[in-house]
Image 1 (cartoon, rainbow, N blue to C red):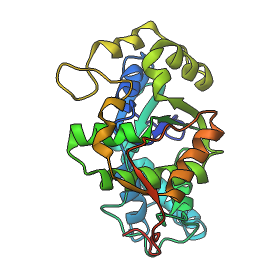
Image 2 (image 1 turned 45 degrees about the vertical axis):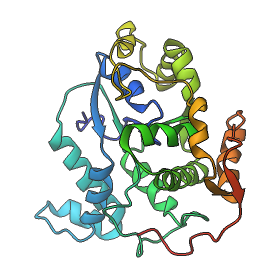
Image 3 (image 1 turned 30 degrees about the vertical axis):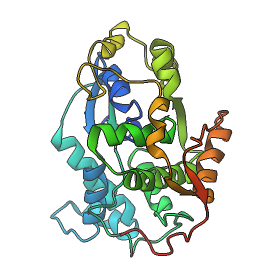
Length: 283
């Protein structure tokens, strides 16, 4: 986990659950120089917002800085919490600010750019992560969103509507912060050639690949009894029959896939139309 020397420079994996994130994290959990923090989103974003209204007895030099830079105050609180929760002398650390901080925070008063469809505060999201981890690297794993819907239904019983809302918000985060992502990993590549994918990320991050990272494949990370990750749930797409999506939502996803050099495969069972888009900020 972080320490004063590396708290600003983790490998940060953002994105959607059921996309291979646990398998990917497990590879780095087997690396001799990494400490794994796990899912940090609730801590990071809650402490950041809570810090705005917090008053603690700190050295004067901090208050002088905080008076002119509230973001630095928030970042200081979050880093101190991270350092205190899981102290480690490991050279590197890895974490997943999983999911979206929408169920325990109100965004109504958060300034900055919001996404067009879900009204998610995308500028705030990237500002928080960028300020905290200015020397780190941001990664994501991309899986066909309709496979994610099927997988979440199977694993967590989430409704298709709930998952779809998450998917659109995350893709709007991708779109706004596309220049912030150092690695975009395709789920298919992770499953088909795990070693090559992990080696490529290690090379980009400037860390040595270790053969023991492949031990991640020896443990079932998928959360489904006696079954590892499935390359595609195409044979179950019939469950999406009649599910309605807005054309603009599909375009957000397809636009990002195209920029990454891939083509989005859309189930013929879904209904593509046009409907009102949310006009109010996410609560």
